[in-house]
View 1: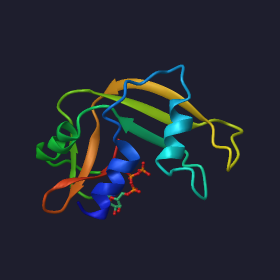
View 2: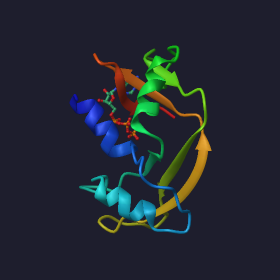
View 3: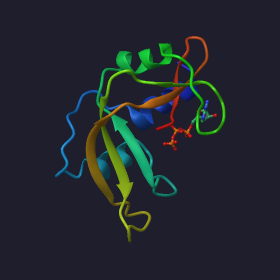
Length: 122
Ligand code: ATP
């Protein structure tokens, strides 16, 4: 696996858990996955689906990414995700997050050979 794919999995994949809105899921996961090192990452999404299903999004047709590149792909089906958003008043190094589980289609940017997700575009 290339560094981009590994970073994507660290930041965005959590296949083996069901989201729980009442838990401190995001506080724990944002720390565990190293997104509270140096600064609190303001916004991050975790995907609760098998890695294979997320990698298969790269087979969908190309669409325009937010940065203008055309290597983005949108999932056919909606996926279980948890959005983590930094709370107002949270101050580094004490990063506190809102945890919002939801289901939606996700868009990923894919690169390389194998052609795999390296960025979550929405
Ligand atoms: P974030 O939640 O911060 O958006 P991310 O999933 O976008 O996280 P980044 O840390 O931004 O992860 O890394 C994205 C990587 O993907 C960068 O190395 C970037 O060069 C690469 N990349 C490839 N294609 C795209 C694209 N179309 N749009 C954005 N990034 C892309």
